[in-house]
Amino acid sequence: MATVSVNDIIKGIAQAAANAYDGSQYEKYAADGKARKVGLKREEGDAILDSRVMDGFKIRITGPKLIVTYQTELSIKEYHNSKLDEEIERTYKGIVSFLKKEYKAITGNTLTLKSDGDADILVQNMSKIRTWAQAKKVYTIGGVKGLDTVGDNQLETPAEKLRTAVEKFLAIGKDKYPGAKKPSNAKAPKGAKKTNNAKA
Picture (cartoon, rainbow, N blue to C red):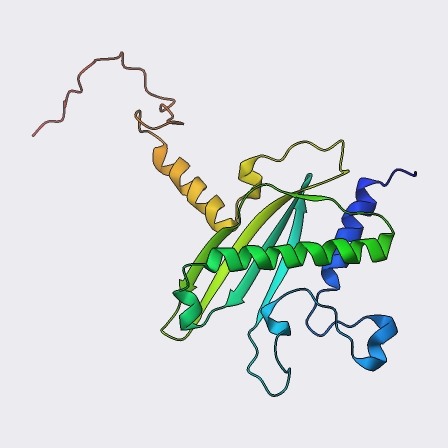
């Protein structure tokens, strides 16, 4: 069996995810209007008559990790649903199943994705009507060898990176916080008291 390069795996995953756009159809069934099913809410109901819920996902790859970000609109009933995390996990199962199926159709090879844990979910509301959820889940890509393990800081979102940078900045000069830095011009011995020689 021929060895699949890392570049080919990444290109195959990227193309599989690109085939998940809203309204995507299988080429051989395009005349019959057979759409690709990802398992998203926007696929439910009639595209013209029903009010459609807009949701979708995107991917990014860093090292041997596949990061899938999912966003969806929520109704007030769904906003107060105590099992929202279970529903989003089911959606992720549908997304992963779709990626594997499309990857197989594109490359002829099998894609292995192993979950690194539960999805990280953030629910927000702008008003009593406008509510949405954002989720992030990390998978380990099988067959990707020769790449360094990615650190947690590289899996952070821009907001998380900003928070980390601000915390490091606030820690400068504070001995009780990790990462504190001593001023380069500080030459006084430890325990020395400060004196004020300024004249009144």
